[in-house]
Structure formats: structure tokens, C-alpha cells
Length: 165
Image (cartoon, rainbow, N blue to C red; front, side):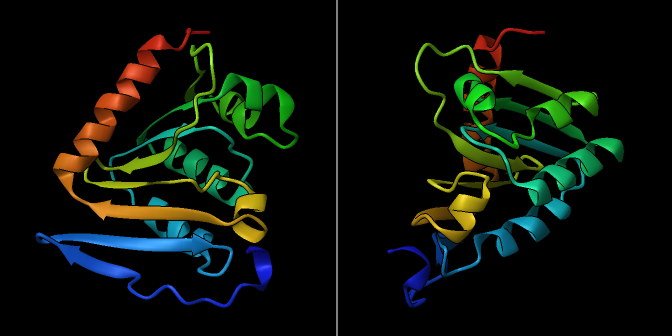
């Protein structure tokens, strides 16, 4: 467990029923190195649901894509925004991004990016330095429009519960 583990992901890239699936385990697989080019490749939209979002690198990309005119929307867990140091939420709001705090009585524990309605990245990996460097986390990237659409449905379910500011 943790940063001393030896990387041994046996099948990091799979094709299942003609669908490409990539698997990553932090800290050994460098999940951030997979997410940065994925988000950077977005041409139309990035939707995210984030329990914890403190990653400057991922936040910078989201803000840049918003500035470039892409449809960037997100919902973040309200308790984490209040309790986390270095949360990206305030920076997103200052950039006039369309982000909301969740309206769930419990934890909004999702960790999801949907890119261009065709690619979904999800797992236990929080968008944070601890997830990248210390914690044992996972991220699965699925290249499938039908699966991405299911995650978009969940995004809008959570989005519609979130109070507008």
C-alpha cells in the first residue's frame, strides 16, 4: 500500500466488447499523467462530479477549457469544499465557471469526469495530491458514448439537486 508499492498492473489497457478500458492505480501508475492529457483533449465539454477537488493541475485545465468556450460544469461535495484547504471551488467560481455545491444530505462521493459525452473517467481517485501521491486509489477510463451518457444522466440528477447560487 502507499507510495512504496511496486507497479504491477497486469492489464492496464483492455478492450471489452469493442470498448477500450484503461485501468490505473495510484500512486504507482501516475493517474494524473493519464488525466491531464485526457482532459486537455476535450473539444466540447467536461462535466465533473467531485467529492474532493484540490488538484491545481486538473483545476487549471478545467478553467482553461472554460475560457476556450467549452461547456464545463461541475458539482462538488459541499462539506469537502468547506473543510478542504486548497479546494478549486472558489477558483472555479472566480473564473465564472458553472459549478455547484451538492444538495445531498450525505456525502456526494462521486469522482467522475465525462469528456465530450464519449469518455468517462471514474473510480475511487479523488482529484487531489493525496490521491496521486499517498493513497491507494483507482481510476477506470471507459471510451464509450453509451456508458458516458449514463454518467451524464447521473451528473444531471446530482446537478438538479444542487442549489443554484
